[in-house]
Length: 431
Image 1 (cartoon, rainbow, N blue to C red):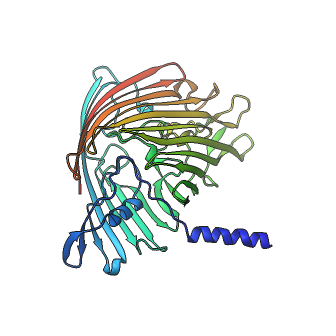
Image 2 (cartoon, rainbow, N blue to C red):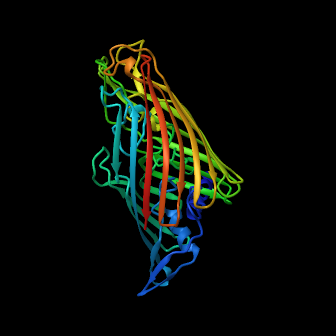
Image 3 (cartoon, rainbow, N blue to C red):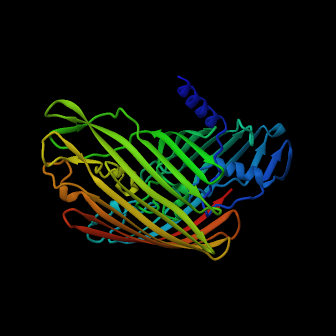
């Protein structure tokens, strides 16, 4: 009884005193001043206000709607910042053009009909609005709320889509934001909204807890909405899920942004066995090693993921029906597929306003040669490659422009292969 009480007391103490070091992406400026509205006057704030707001925002590489001004409440009771980013891209595809003007996903490459081997497209779908609110800033009861939206309906049309909506308090993050299995700061900057195809760069509904020990060691654990995509057949069917996915990580940090992180995820996927007329469960797991190494003017990003039944946590596998596939041994059974993905990226910083990055990323799946699936074995996604070279220039804190070349290919289990190339140009204004 005493032992249980001590454990509970320790947990309460950790939660009460939870402090999470502000992690920002290496391409995100820090210690900036802000235009501050205080009453009916406008003046410059200290860097503390800027850093507090940035710490409440996602650490994603493409999050450029950083605070440029803020409203400060009486007696510094709150900070409020509204951010806007206009992002316009022009892209030209040749090979087998992808039907998305903002994202280059190798899994989406399919053979096009004769005469359609190239395509020119324009979009402002990735423009953003964000609302960043800090209550009781720089106190032990600091509360943060962040909401951001893009002008993409989730497909290729214009609309409004929430990509972040969460609250932070005492180390907890509750809402809709990047999965905890994703190491956002270890994702290199790309004009392409997809980013390297082996990342887990997507949002999910989460309840996460993170804690920092002396700004060096950090851990996180959470529960998230179960996301899955499976291949069924005449003997199986999909059902609603009963259990959340459970990610966790431990990270060691040194220097300014350099760190190494070990992550894992545990999950259960439920499906219907139509032979026995009962629900069945398959256990899935995944492990990831990721990080950043900064040296001189270089930044090296890396990430490697492996697991069974966690294909959907590799971005290029989302919606590809690979988490579970039909068993070759028994009708009515599904099996967890093996998947892995990895990338390496090297960024060179010519100056604070100009940098260039080269990236290579690879995704590969392993499934049994089943029969009678609703998606045939031969049509399943076996592996894909993704390579990028870009140069990004920010002439001032409001404008960013860049040029990027991307190439990729999709290879299926029937040995068919399709490739595509893309050149993207970007012009962005952030206010």
